[in-house]
Image (cartoon, rainbow, N blue to C red):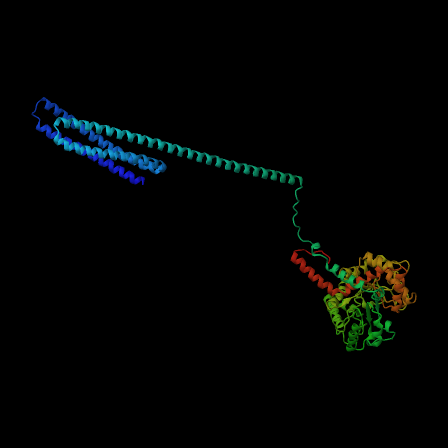
Length: 608
């Protein structure tokens, strides 16, 4: 609506200007014509001509003024359009005022136009003087009208300028307020962030200081290097594991069963017959209530290989616990198994030593062991470790010689051959039997050799056997007063068994008594007394008691009376079971060595 009115106003103003300019041009033309026609008139006419020139100049000035007004109007209209876009509300108010002004201008223009037409019509009728006067009046009126228009326009221009300045000032203040708000808002958030960060840093610093204070208050942890695995890291040794198994077996036994387990008997001693050839009903009945630790067989129990092998197999099924099935085969055919063809190749100790070939003695041991093992024998009472230092001494043929250093290799070679065949050797007789001219089998036997003599000779052989791993040693029944002033047979002498063999020579294997059926024993002691004395002396097994049941009862009575402790019996059984479970020990050792290898533990010098 406002733009339409402005457009109309602009058109009307242009029309007024055109009319003014046209009117001025007509007047100038008329004046020029009049001047040419009257150039020859009198001074009044000259004056009129001068006035015409003045009028022409005035007309030119009016035309220039009109053009200036038109230019100003155009500039003002452009300014008005700019202002109208910025101040829409003010334009609405101006449009009302301009509308009124435009109506007045329109009326004035119409009147001027009418007057101009009338003046033109009357111009033809009036005289020149009147026309000049009228023109002058018309010019004055035009000047006044133009001046008024200019004044109004200047007023409107100034008003617009004021409005623009006001708008800019308001805009400036608004922008200033917004800028101030942003400034203080940003500053508020920056200050808040700084405060929060300062508080956080202060809290972190306080926490760090507190942690440092705690660390200073606490001792620095000692960083320990992980030590290399040792033997202790492997856990219980194989021997300790085996002892735990043995302790479990012993704990499950009654005291009587334990004592029976110490007996190494002949089959005749529990069956009551003179010669056992088969394991029949008598043997079954005897073994049903008496389970010995071992049974020793001799030549009278052998007729042929099949008979003996069958008797061994049957006996193994009749015992409630594993037992040692033993014989004595040193190469002299005292077992009867060489003649029965069980042992196919053998050699007496003296003949073997005469060869000077230790390896041949090993082979003898292997051949003997293979034969014994084939019929079920597990223990051989061989080799003989005696020195035949006395002419005509007992068992001279069973000895490998009279020089300790010379015979030691043969003794250990024979034992090694038996072990290779799966037979446990029993070294015999400690401290010596061959050194005595008397045989304890037939009665009291005494040898006057000094203990220093034994230490220089026989003890060297025994020490070699012990160091070689002898698991069993059998005592002799010879009396050695230089060792035991009480003149007790060696099997019953604690000074000989414990004092010398256990303590001096440091032997911890199974000690078996000499045959308690020898006359050197039975002539002076009952079966029960001899068994108790042998056990108290340090023997672990009672060999060939003439009455095993009486021997067991004597030991039970001794335990009841406090003469022998049950722990002593348990210790003896532990040694016996270590030999019996030798195969299990080897298995445990293999596992132990594998574990040591995987962990990088060196077992050099370790006893396990």
